[in-house]
Image (cartoon, rainbow, N blue to C red; front, side):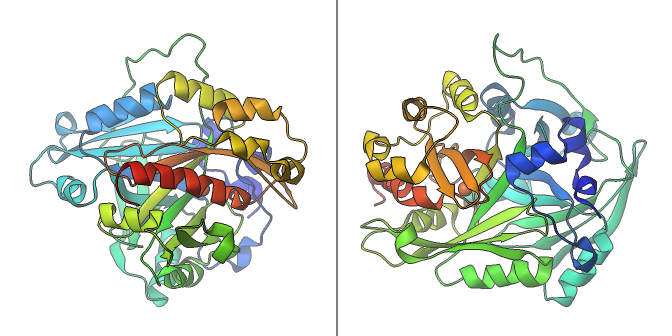
Length: 401
Ligand SMILES: [Fe+2]
């Protein structure tokens, strides 16, 4: 399988090609012939929220996503509403309970707005499940076909950290709007004049938070069960402020199309942001979703215009001569970044620009990152300290620090 074959249909429909994806999310060459668990790419990020109607509106109006499919009582699903939204190659599925006994409502009651399923597209569901089972994974849903007039999808699901799962799906024989049971639906929302066609194009990484002492176990899970490789490792001072600390390791699929940083809290003088997440999410879960853009300035301007709030970066960050010499020349003047609070990091491969939102739900749990890569395959290691100090200021305001 060449890199070209690794595009999902969503990516092709969004006119993404190998070169643009490589730039957006940092792909590498690899030999899929020896991969025990080949992954084509991201399929969908599935949410359970308290109000899917309004959350779907938020992702359309604020994040510029497009409504493409729907399932609910009108389509025979009396349990929950489900809105399917897209931006470039990224698909979110927003579920909210209708029946008071819906599992979506139970999930939301415990975890708040959160991610239930990080679904991945794979070329061979049965091969993946066979390998996962042999490595001790919990198979939640056995491989099965679902069909309608648009064709057949084959899927299965395995458990990962907390109450999160990975659905594995082969949709190569399906051309419907999402899955059987869903109908195509578009929105009546009209984009503001001058709004960009898309605010982001691709999904870069999804970070998982796990309990103290469990990070290596989950790194091992992704190594063994899904054949993911270790990308980078951050421990100790790199990722600690004077008060709180965390440890993080990153695993990635063969060509780095799917990247999962895994965090655990580390012992420090005060409560780590990971502890705060674990307390309010009531356990491990997905912490942030990093969305790739090819113009982060325009992305941030569009989001700010819609009222999306970002973590503030102190002016001292930009005025630090060490930062200036570390990052060297980037594509825009530093003051353009400073005006928007965009962070910069550079490594041996290039640089990246990144910014983090405040939590988008009611609990201090899930948030978003927007990232523009220029060769760097990293995650902004050089920014962690400045970033965590910004997070700690927010934590302190909530009385959780
Ligand atoms: Fe990130």
